[in-house]
Image 1 (cartoon, rainbow, N blue to C red):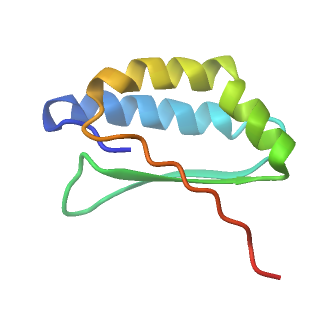
Image 2: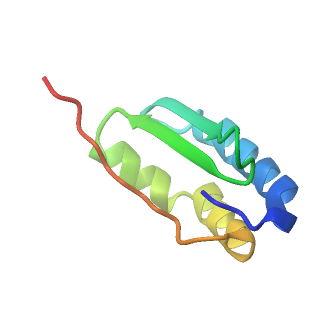
Length: 88
């Protein structure tokens, strides 16, 4: 989640709110926002969900949609979402 430099502070507030709210979503195992040290307007969001159903519910949740709407004008690049599965 990259924000334009002038929107960094507002973006960080939105990201913190998203993390706090998302941690209470059903099926959330972990939700962290990591801020890049060298470019503080760049963050990585790490989410772990119990299953695909929980992830889909989170993506469609009102608070997640509200975050996307508020973050979009501050965005410095396309939102890059990648899904990973743990090796067993």
